[in-house]
Length: 252
Image (cartoon, rainbow, N blue to C red; front, top):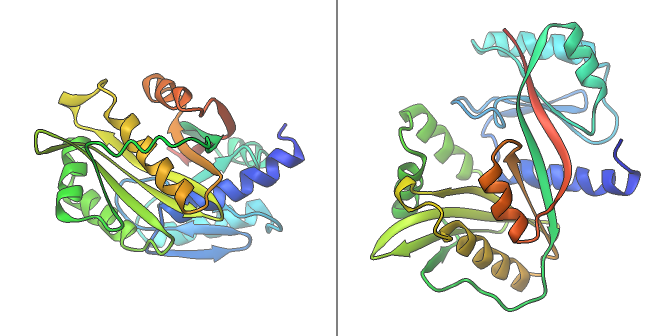
């Protein structure tokens, strides 16, 4: 059970994370938001709850199934711990659970670490950033690349894109978005041949310094629950608290 004070913060963080990774195509649906960007990313191709009043969940699921069917794809429901009643309904409808993740939160430390050495910052992703991000991800389909580019092109909140450079080569990337005093980390990735060398950490520290200068007081990120190396990295930077978890549900 999430305490009320934690729930209030969790809903703000949920909103921040959604706005940090927009979907070019989405509609409101009875207190939920249906996102349909195309491509493989579940976050931007799923039914997500909004805070406050929500229509009868069984009715919403039926309507969403029909809408996604018209798009030629199955319905994926993203279920945060904030709406546990959805798990009961979806269990009964034969929806399996996958992709368990957690949302980490930390107050921004009031220090002067800037992490700027070897880190390039820009408020827009240039060709070098995009190419480096693709290299860090490995084999990525053309559809995935296109839908990712379309997503970040929709960002309207203050943002900063970071690259870690070594020997004139970008070895890690990340970007951060500011929403109501909260920094959201997104797309943190390191090239496979340069991992476990502290590159992601330097990017996070640099983005935290930028966010502090912009008046942010907290930071958050969402990470796969079973990704132990990533969770250890973030814990070392103060992200030891899991504010809430979420999972995806889909029918076979």
